[in-house]
Amino acid sequence: MKKIFALLLLSSIVISIEAAGPSLRSRRQHKAQGGASAEPWVGARNDDRSPRSGRQRVFEMINGCRSLRELECDRGAFPRANALGFTLPPAPQAEGNAHNQALQTDAQTQAALAAYQQAQSLFQQNRLEQSLAALEEALKLNPKLVLALTLKARLAMAANRLDVAKTCLLKAVEIEPQSAYAQFLLGFFYYLDNDFKNALPPLDRARQLMPDDARTQFYLALTYEALGRNDDAIANYEQAIRLGATEKAQLADTLTAYARLLFTLGRYGESEKLIDRALAVAPDSRDGNYEKGRLLFEKRDYAGAIACGERALALQGVGVTERQIHFLLARAYTKTGRKELAEFHLAKFRASNPSLRR
Image 1 (tube, rainbow, N blue to C red):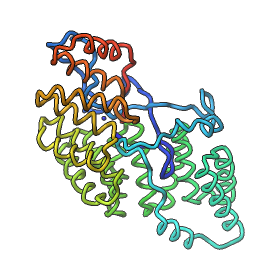
Image 2: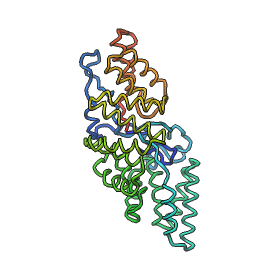
Image 3: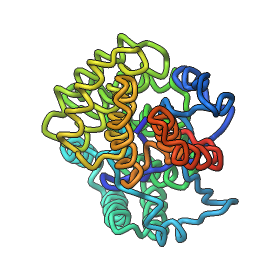
Image 4: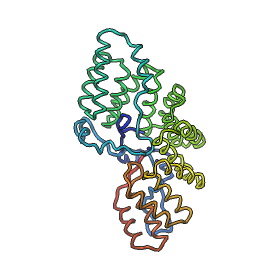
């Protein structure tokens, strides 16, 4: 359990994150441990609770397995999915315009802006190496160009260079503390790095500066939830739903995440209403179908749970893992006495590595 990222980081670029292991410290992750004691797989790790912490598909840009060029060629590195807030919005146009107007209009600054605009265009084309080169030129001409710093941070997060991203974002908010977008990205960075305590102040500041932004409210809700502050999480989920009513992908993400929290709290009826709303908006959501299956299992509608689980397994997504779906199906098939299918899904569950998704 979380959707944001990162991914990334354009309005249509999404970060997937591979499991990070014992360093993950979300409270909900801790709750996620534990199996179903009456079942034949007692003792197996149960990740059926959909934890969102961790890193999936990690890429190393400098010393490791992936260069920006390889990322450019691998479209699968940036799947677009309705998976709990992994899509970042572009910098608000009004904010960008205001920043541009505030800059000095000397020739060097104009050249820096031109280099940034070229970098942005290249980024949209997924030409990441060229985009980075243009950004370096922009920042050489104007080291305080906040738009270039935030774009470089997004590139760095896409390549798992969180050290570079952090440096850029801290500098950006120091230069322009009233930038809602820079504050949001800094909070998002800390959230991505599982540093939920430090994620809260910049996200809350972004909310104050941009109170009508549904995505900021969404990440605040996720952060409060990770910190175990469920009442605050619920209040922010409710606000995110109100603000994001016209954005279908964002609304589905928010409804699904909120439903998961209510499921964890044992409020199954309220959770199911939210999941039904999410599926009405995004019927092909893997997460939504999986969550519906879990709810039906709790209602002892095992046939319904199987139908939803099988549908989720056939859909693409970067939120819920196949391992989680196999676990649900193994339990549901056991309850219906279909031992062969139960053992098949249990074997799939045991054969797959535990993977935690934000």
